[in-house]
Image (tube, rainbow, N blue to C red; front, side, top):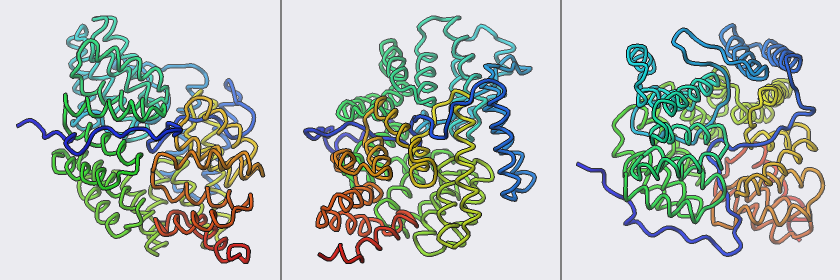
Length: 494
């Protein structure tokens, strides 16, 4: 039976007049934030040594240090421009990203089996395209940057064997989106759809690219088109996110529930349940969030987004010790900026400032390694630097990202970077633009309120800070504390 469509829920949302386009998945392409650019083997080695030294000071176990050093060495290999050939003739080296599953299949999709088949049938262009996409999908789930050059080589081989085949073009779209080259991703998706209008991966990558480029109205139309042509879990999750960005939380929840009902594989169940958990957490329903994350982890106990989400929900529910344990498990496997900052802030509110500083230092080291490897740094790195690092560098990063793509998340990041640099009058229009689509985000409301307070708009500040805490009182250990303190100050009562 064909999957049920979802567009009966409503037509594509119209973009508000004057609304800045923009949105971001759990990773957005960004600029560097940690000082002078590192290039060549010298910069690579220095960054790797710094990363490993911080890991040792952090007291990571042997396995944790091994993971951190592997990340360091992999990113460093990209800095040298080297692509290592493995015994199966596929390459190794690169970055991380990707908003969600591109098909209903599991993320690895049988890489060893595909490699074995291609050794026997080296001219199978479809097999090469499948292998390329399998590497992209696996990198999305395990954060292994060595898979992106492998994916690129496999996809190029497919196009060499059959120029213009939609499978390889769709794979290139997914790869470009994963690397945060969203203009390229859109171009590849359009080429793939010209060859085959029903290619599910291309339909999904096209939505991703339009969202990440801030073209919300176009993304809504693309989601409607994808739903009409290929309804299913990958399309449903993207459709839900487009609705959420326009403030249609109820529609987003209903669509995700439909997607969960349609999910069959453990990977799909874990992913969709995690998205429902994130949506519930964003709306301050921490109990529902914990239930969704429990379902995700029951389906796949290695699903790191569910473990990280559960940690945030635990922290918001008062179980900070449990939250710390979960986040420590996450960063031991994948020390990326988001969970590192979350863990650092939990340490900070517990008074463990030395541990907190080590997490923030790891963000800086990760950023240096990413830059040394020529990898786009995620947007949350700019926010991490604004709150816990080099404020000038954070502003440079946020400006560079705003120049590339104008989304609600880049508007918020630029507003906050301007604020921490004392440029609040300049920050205020960007903070307002971040909320103009109707997207309900407590962090955005907190940032807007603090900026309004800084420019003397006390009534507006009180309204937005209260709204942030009403929406999600546990949105951030430090941010929520700051919002409450601002509301209790004498100026807030005037």
